[in-house]
Image (cartoon, rainbow, N blue to C red; front, side, top):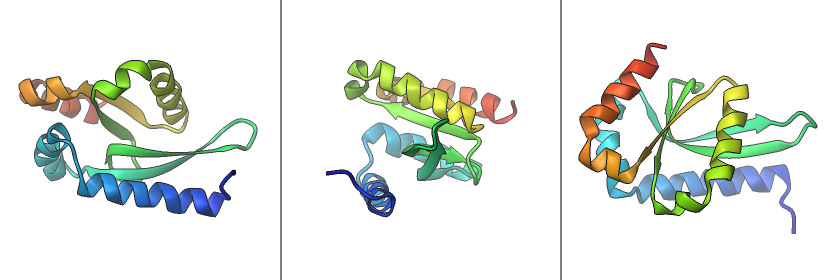
Length: 124
């Protein structure tokens, strides 16, 4: 059963609320340094395709409003989703949103390096 655009929007927004309330350890740690920089958590973004289709995405962290920069924290489930992530990142780029991806391990073990990369990208 296909969802109507309104049903899809409601589903995505509910998922964003759920994910914000249940962050991974890496997301929680990164949030402590991104929040003071003006990032928002679990940002719902709509991208339109060339043929008028709609793609709804939830950004782990978006900066500013509307987002120009997306920071994603990828757990082990993303190992098998490289193609999907690449398509998503390309679609976001077409809509003017740059994506930075970090693994949970990077965030947990090299937070200063991750933060330096984010700050550098914010100035780009």
